[in-house]
Amino acid sequence: MVARMEIDVPDNAPPGGHYSHVTTGAGLVFVSGQLPIDKVQGRLADAPFAVQAECAIRNLINALRAAGSGPEKLLKVNVYIVGIDHWPAFNRVYAELLGPHRPARAVIPVPELHYGFLVEVDGVATA
Image 1 (spheres, rainbow, N blue to C red):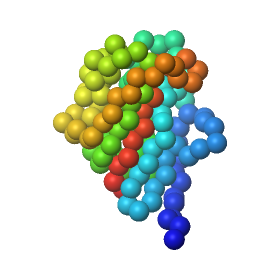
Image 2 (image 1 turned 180 degrees about the vertical axis):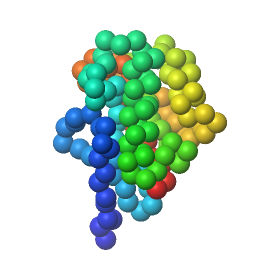
Image 3 (image 1 turned 90 degrees about the vertical axis):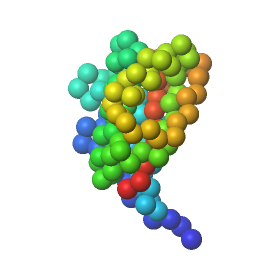
């Protein structure tokens, strides 16, 4: 049996590669890795870490909303960080944007990310 998959593209989604920003199926919303790319400002690779983190998290939230979900419905978040020393700064921005909601989360240190970014975020939520 093949699961039915719906593909949603947020109006403000930055351009991407051969993937969907967000898909839904079986009552769940899957958001692809969101990088600090702003539709107006472009790639924020030279921006301070906290600015990159905020942009990536906002892209995640925008993708959720495009699929009829929202940050309060997040079940699991994966965070890829270049330099684990950025973890406290990420945690501050994440807590500010998600408020009291605390989905399961993994923070994965990586040696590098595409375009020289310092952070990437993906997630799974309920529809």
